[in-house]
Image 1 (tube, rainbow, N blue to C red):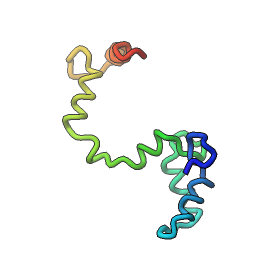
Image 2: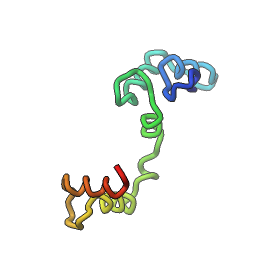
Image 3: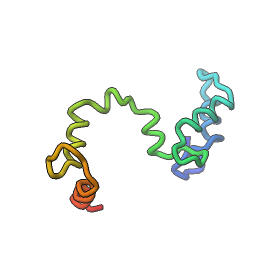
Image 4: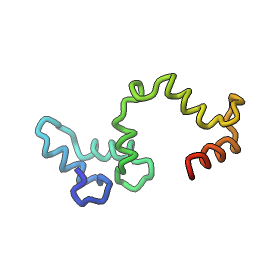
Length: 96
């Protein structure tokens, strides 16, 4: 879909991809509605992260074990809460 190879899908590229698929019948206003829902940054384009977030099935991707593991990565002192200091410590561990 990323015809101009910018790493983002703009409204025209999405519209062309949909129009080229004869099995999809959708109006231009519906296309813009999709972009507005997915476009977190408000630049009328869909970047890779926004595309992944919009297409991922959260019920399959996130489960209790994965959420707990993620929480534990940030709860660096094992207190059961995540503080600003915990976030700093966690980010320093991964080199950010």
